[in-house]
View 1 (cartoon, rainbow, N blue to C red):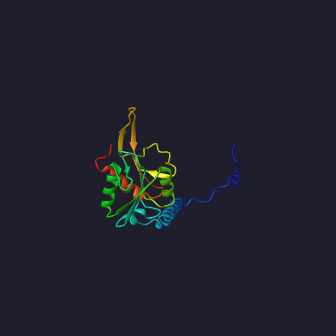
View 2: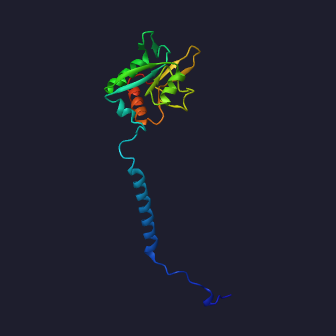
View 3: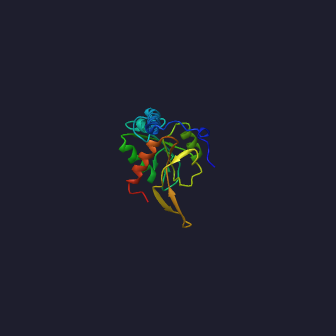
Length: 180
C-alpha cells in the first residue's frame, strides 16, 4: 500500500553544520566551566587546608609523642628520644624548623591534633591504628616484626586535610632508608 504524499510530513531541513556547531558549543562550555572551577584552586598541589607545611618551614614543627620504645622514649625531664624522634628531627631540619615536643597519651594527642594544636603524631603507630578516621596516616615507612612473629607496618599521623605536609613527610620517610 502506498501512503499518500500529503500524509508524510517531512522533518526540518537538514543543515549539516548545525550538529558540529552544537558539539563545539557544548565542549567549549564544559571547558569554561572546568576553568572556572579550578581558577580558585591556583597554586601547587597537594595543598594544606590550614597551611601547615608553609607555617612549619622556617618555623616550628609541633609533634605529639606517645611513649613506645624503641620508636619513642619520653624521659622525666621532658627529653625525647627514639627512632621516630630522630626521623622527625631530620624532617624538621630539612624544613629549617625547630621541633616542639608534646608528650602524652595517644588519645590526648589525637584530640590535640584534631583541635589543630599538633602537626605530627608519633609513638609507634601502626597502619591498623584506631585513629584512622580522625587523623591522616602516612604510608607505612617501616616493618616491625612483633614477638609473636607478626609484621606490623609503622606509620605517623598528620591532621586531616594537611595534604602537602603529609606528602612532604612521606617523601622524607621514603628517602631515609627506613622505608620497608
